[in-house]
Amino acid sequence: MSIQQIIQSYPAKSEYLLEMLIAVDQQKKHHYISAEEINEIASYVKVKESHVCSVMSFYTLLSTQPRGEYVIQVCKDVPCYINDDFNVVLTIEEELGIVLGQTTNCGRFSLEQTACIGCCDEAPAMRINHEIYTNLTKEKVLDIIHTLRGDANGRTT
Figure 1 (cartoon, rainbow, N blue to C red):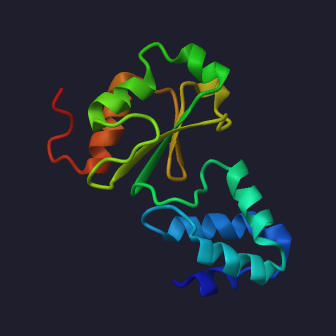
Figure 2 (tube, rainbow, N blue to C red):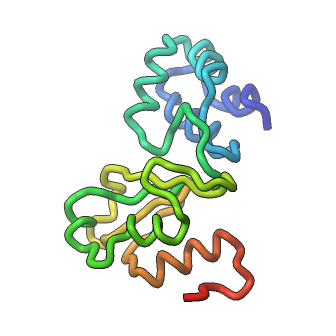
């Protein structure tokens, strides 16, 4: 589906801007919205490009830079931090061989931190693309990564 088809499936009103941005992001393998697409969306809803960029900068699930096929966003707010007795970020960094803000050489995984994702009662939590994972343990995190990788035999550790 082209960007024109995606955005034209919404009314040409700024109230639908966030929904359009998420829909465009979900269609792209590397989860970003280019400058040309921002211009196109801004023109369609009749707002300035800077307005589109300000909306995008508020929501960490949106980006203007290419990212991995799987964008792993670990919640960094207090409940997740307090309940993270094994260090989610460190576990992912060690498993993927990257640090926060990086993408794996193969382009499959990007690792980021994000503000609260609304799962404080099930902390620690992370979001991968648009799916939320809660009550994380080291084993659960590793299983999720191995499943996304498509490892035939599951975890090896």
